[in-house]
Length: 376
Image (cartoon, rainbow, N blue to C red):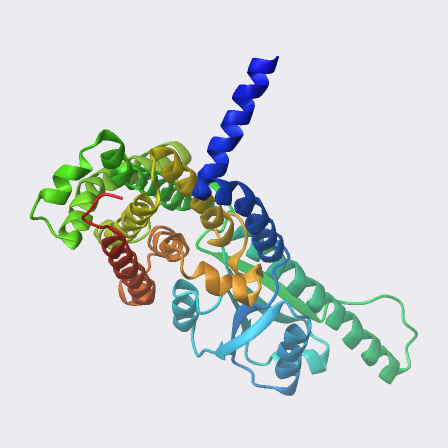
């Protein structure tokens, strides 16, 4: 028993001397609790919404104001056609579109059924459910109020309500709301993040543990050349993994690919490289492969929870959204779901590409600066 306690005490002393590991043991649970407890929220509110108002009546404007007053919809603009709605949904300018037909106000005034259409981006099922349920309830409540007002004007006792305003939900890009269609494209980004960061996170640490770092130190290679050289081989590995996931996703789960495959592969290169650069940066911080592995796992959880893979990005508070914009996975999910589910073009994804390029440049620069051509 005494010998066991001595070994345990020795182990505690070793952990205490390793400041990085000690900091992660104490800091990671606290940081993750504060971050995820604050950021994760399944109640989707302030959904970006555009309006295609073909009536422009007082009744149509009033209905839009009631939608905004619920807190579930945030009016971000007005459009003039269904093509504009498609563009807004593909670029994620909006997730919802309200279509008001001509003569909507006249039909309401005459007591005829006035049809509204709610178009929702089906690439996120949680947003679909929240947006559709709220709109249907709002239309039913307004119908009841209009019926009561009309009966009171006619002096007829209330004997029930009729449907004056009918809301027709229409889901684009995933009309059947199949979970696999939503999950499989996202899994490409999650798996690539996990493997690419982990592969390179141990690169410099492995060189240090094996004693081969000295060979790099005495070589004429520059820091940037070393960084890029470490990244290049794994880009091919990332493409192989991506191809396997998309192929099996299509064959096994019947996930369609609506857009350009060459465009998807071209944009994916920047995402793969950004994750590899991040892993290489981790490897310059870690003194062992174990520490590099711990950093990789610490980074993986925020990606899954804050990028929009599992929880609606729109439901997160604004500070958490800004934090998530620094994660490569946040932008890649929009890229791959945009291409695979919506058939988005390069022009519609150019802002996500600029974000990925910016993150790649920053991470490559940090990894290059952190590498010192000298022994610790």
